[in-house]
Every structure is written in structure tokens, then in C-alpha cells.
Length: 233
Image 1 (cartoon, rainbow, N blue to C red):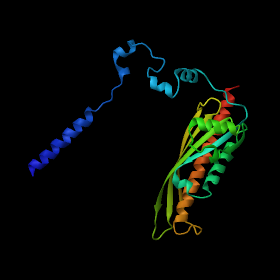
Image 2: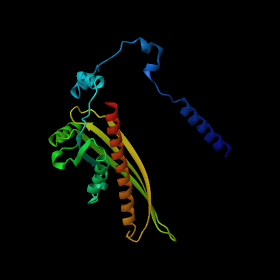
Image 3: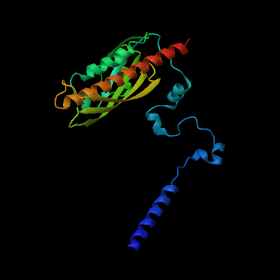
Image 4: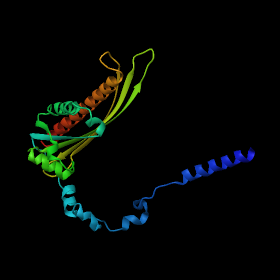
């Protein structure tokens, strides 16, 4: 028994020592690194197949100018769980666009039809679709959620949803992304008579949390546009 305890203690000490010995390596921390010549463009030829050094330089050295009034094309990238719920996509879009229209710079917001994105929502295809819709900006949003259901014996059931909504604002003319944002929402609902067999409670919790997250995202974008207008004066 003593030998077993000693062996376990020895293993624990060895593992602890291994964890303490781990470290990361960064070449820039070496004293001789600052004496190296400065690299301003990619030395890897394969990178040019995606984007040229000249294009990267122009993007990093320049700035974009957002229009005073603009239309926004919206696309929702969602997991299959959300897509299966009929009617929700329209409701989520309304929550987002209603908040966007609070900005005086937004002429209107419209969803990009699936017919304009038959092969997926890559950046070049989003820019093309937005140009066809004559929208200066593209708003890409994605929703993920996780629901915890609590079944009560002497009390009403409840459900808590942890919803995460991401947004990306794309400038149609240049392909530059001036804004990204993430909103995390935690929303709890208690069962009511209108909820049927718990599934209704689950769906209502998910819907309310998602609407709140998308509304907040729309407000974030509106605030960004307002600040950009103030900075441009």
C-alpha cells in the first residue's frame, strides 16, 4: 500500500513539473531579432494566389469613407437548428433591421435572397450580391444558442438560454470590414399556460433571447454609424 501511495505521489510530482516547464516561444523576444531587416511584404508566393502584396498594402495604408446615407444588405448565417424553425428567420430579421433603421444614415435594410448566394456566402459573393441590390454595406450575422431546461415538481418549469450573436459589417465597394461585434445574452423564462408540454417553453426562451441579441447588435451598428458620422466632420 505504501509503495502504491509513493508511486502515485511521484507521478503527481512529475506531471506537476511537466506543467510548470511548458512555455511559448516568440522569435521577436530574442535580442538579435531587432537587428533583422524589416519585412514589408509576404515572402511566400502562395499568398499571392489569395491576395497580392499590393492589395494588402493599399488596404492597410488607406481608409474607407462610408456614405452619408446607405442601404444595408443583410444575410443571416445560421446553424440548421435555427433554419428548421419556420417563421423565425423573418422575425429575427425584423428585430435586426428595426434597430438599424433607428440610424438616420440608414436608408433601408433588406435581406439578400438565397437566389443571389447559390454557392455560399463568401466575401466576393456577398459584395456582388450587395452591388446587385445597390446596397453600400453588407451586414452578416450568425446566431448560436444553448438552452438549459429545468423541470420542477412543485413549481413551474423554466428554461434558460445562452445566446451568442455575431455581426460583421462589410463595405461593398472595397471589401474592408469596418466593424465586428459579438453580443452574448442570457435569458430565463418561466412556463405559462400558452406553453405546451415544455417544448413551447423551450422555443419561446430561444426566440426571446435571440431577438434581444439581434436588437442589441442592430443598436451597436447604429451607434457605430453615428460615431463614424461625427468623426468624419
